[in-house]
Image (cartoon, rainbow, N blue to C red; front, side, top):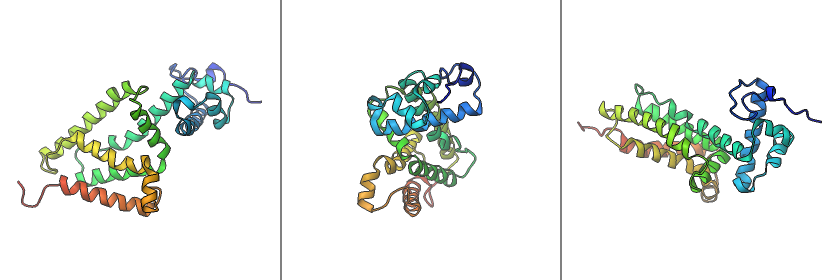
Amino acid sequence: MEAGPTRADAGGLGPEGDGAPRTRIQERNRARILEAALGTFSRFGYRGARVDQIAEDAGMSKSNLLYYFGSKSEIYKAVLADLLDRWLAPLRTLDPEGDPRTELTAYIEQKLRFSADYPQASRLFANEMLQGAPMMRDVLEGPLKALVEEKSQVLRHWAESGRIRPVDPTHLIFLIWATTQTYADFAPQIEAITGSGIHDEAFRRQALQALTDLIFAGLLPRPGSP
């Protein structure tokens, strides 16, 4: 029979966010729960997902799981926060002193890779947005907005130094999000039309080439322009 963790064992996870440092075992258990919850929420949605199903998929008892997260909503919010953190990680690396073509190509490539590696995550996040982001409004209006504003300054810096054409940086970021995430969010449509998908490396290279050709055709200064 599985032994449940004590409050000390659960650290910052029992309940989630109590401030105590986590041990490696706690981190592994938390990762197991979030991975299982991602699959469950992706299959059944928030309303259809059950805590006991998440616990079963994570290979632990429901009571054990509830030492780490006190409710289904806590699990769901943690899954979305974890996804958003991974999703935004490539954007954080944009270097204002780097070459715009190199920096943006790397960013687009990482976004396509995320769509390939975490299609469930992308679709779950998209579904939350379609529902009006009831569980994420504070995160979207806080950390996400702050990061977009910070990286918009990078794009403005490149424009002011003549390395890219003047463009609304927020809309450029939206464009990159839309064109990369569609390969996960609309995977069945893409696979039905092409017979392939973003999980295929050759297809992903073709997508990267097409997107960067189109974006840089409008973004990079034209020969002879001031």
